[in-house]
Length: 118
Image 1 (cartoon, rainbow, N blue to C red):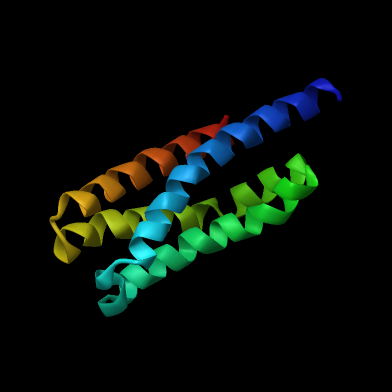
Image 2: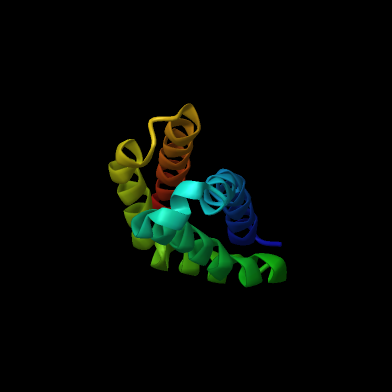
């Protein structure tokens, strides 16, 4: 494996670790009663799922260049979903679970963005 492949492998691993947090937020939102009643919240968890779904095949195939290309291509949508959730979360619920989900999503998406920009 050359240095570029090693760097890409490490970068993909770091992004994937952050996506585990995004996945948990997505799962929490999907199964919340509030998601059944709020179209914007439903859209947030769909975008989170779509982002991760697009990265699954290249991750499983070990195609790190394709993974990173897809991650960058869809990053704007991921950031938009994070921004939308941060905007609507206080209106949806002030419960600690929603506050922590918003914080977790914000931190993870910002880390993914920094990793992809580096």
